[in-house]
Amino acid sequence: MSGVREVEAVFREERGRLLAALVRRFGDLDLAEEVTSDAIEAALRHWPVEGVPPKPGAWLMTTARRKAVDRLRRDQAFAARLAILQVEAERAAPAPPADADGGELPDERLQLFFTCAHPALPAEDRGALTLRCLAGLTTPEVARAYLVPVQTMAKRIVRAKKKIREARIPFRVPGADELPERLPGVLQVIYSIFTEGYAASSGPDLQRLDLAEEAIRLARILRRLLPGEREVAGLLALMLLVHARRDARTGPDGEPVLLDEQDRGRWDRGLIEEGSALVVTALSGGRPGVYGVQAAIAALHDEAADLTTTDWPQVVALYDVLLALDPSPVVALNRAAAVAMRDGPEAGLALLDELAGEPRLRGYHPYLVARADLLHRLGRLPEAAAAYRAALEVAGSEPERVHLRRRLTAVEES
Image (cartoon, rainbow, N blue to C red; front, side, top):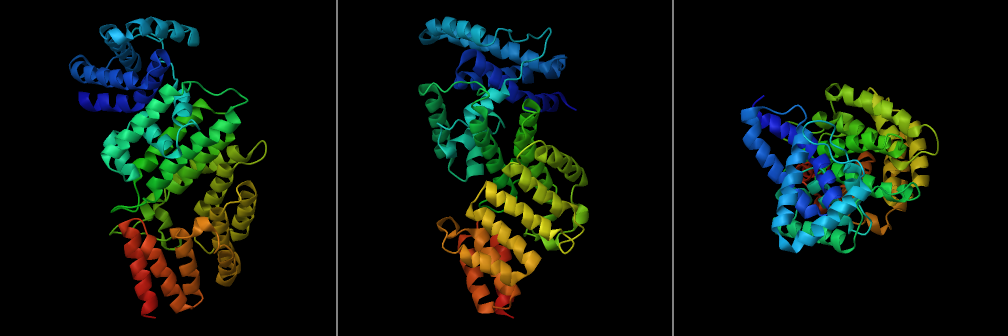
């Protein structure tokens, strides 16, 4: 591996920890980002020549900390503030950060997770800030993920940082009494990133594997930091079990391949085994959570030899549990699809018709597609064609539109 590639690998692994530690010490997210970049630039100059140090994270931390102090000293507006920041940092973290000669770089990413996903921030800002700070994506990359102009995303990120600063949102892990209320927000941000990676809301590709893999990486970090939280295990399990099918989900031209048509030999058995083991952890020791139950459903799909041998009664039973935990129309939609597989398309369509008045399902692409498919299976072709046309109007990515046009053509030519 070349020196530059070594630096890039270290940067990817260490950046979040470094940024979190600097935010903790100096209380300024912008400053932390700037000196983190400065430290990486210094590494790019020195490491290819001198070699990667034994403790690269500690080297980066020492370099970034010195640059932060130098920058604050040069800026008279921050001169008085520096002394206050140092005193506050020492009180908040009695153990000093490790230097390049020994000790491990303290991992304070958990504080940054909860800061980026703080409920005081607008929902659209939480995911953007998480991708920018914890996943290390550039502002243009985050803008591309959210399908907005770069300037719009830059303003959104600046707004979120300003909110953190002005509202004095603390860089800390919530106490035991706050954690149950705050953790779901962190998990939702990560899952939203994964969902966009699993099925892109628009664009030329069905999947954004870079986003899906970043979400999994963030969940792995969170799992290491909160090993006792079963819903963290559940979320990681769910994403692994779904991501295991990634190679079989698209055809040669990038078009979607439905579950019943996928080559299950292309599914990633390693991810399935890891995810299935985590399902056991997620469902053990108390009332199940929404991610653990969804992961159990995903595991049943992944463990089946084909669609017909899937344990549909168990899938429906799990959806019953999930609906009690999360009585949302989207869960009801997924349950209806499972009922259609267990009891036939007419039973599933009846449940979908009961949901027709739900405001959140109006124009919801998966609902329209599910209804069109069941109508097609029942031979109600004019209604199926109308439903496919409605789905086409709101389809996100180009591969989805191509797929729906083919299904519509097949119905019209029947």
